Image (cartoon, rainbow, N blue to C red; front, side, top):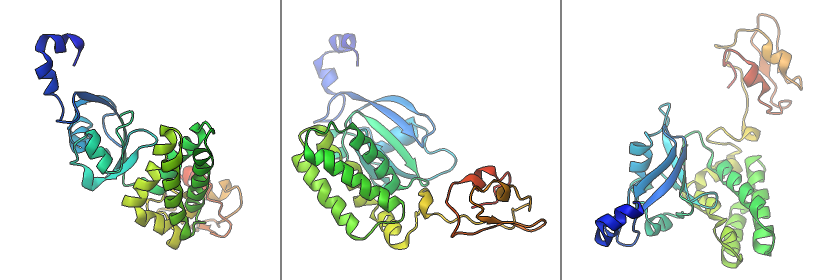
Length: 269
């Protein structure tokens, strides 16, 4: 509402917008895997489902909704079962996120939640002013652990270490950045712990986004036996003979994605 509207319609009208404890409207920056991105102004108490699917048009390309990250880089990632949560300060906090700057990043089923936590922790660590040790050193150590997990070198005790570091940073950091910084990690550990465990125990990325954990194979039914992948591989990890499908040697492959980008027939998975 604008100031003229409030003056013209009165305080009672203005107080009726929103919820009992969270008044007014809120501007959200809706982005990510959603059809209509942009700034969205809705009354406080509007559900996440309404904002993402009715206002934002839902998930494009027939993909499935996976999570929404709320509150900016130090916000939390909320899964599908919370879509009917009203967007107000109390409800969002209970879900493990924050209102923050009003950021809403929608993620579909192609998103790796471990890599997403790593991405936000990288931002938070970079933004740390360095004044207090918990934030300066704690976020750096958390980022190192997340990068290790994404590269297939994670260990079971890493999850406990992440949780312990998160608690220390939240309790002892001097400012809001450090106090909320662990949220992306804590929320993904709470709701998507199975993805962390897949990275650590199975050395697999369920979303197939962490390149270090992927194995590239040639689909012989799609392969046209052209040899383009063979000619472009920078480490000679691909074996090919004329009129035969290519073969990728996993022990030589460096996961550079060159073969995938060069193949005109989408024959490499």
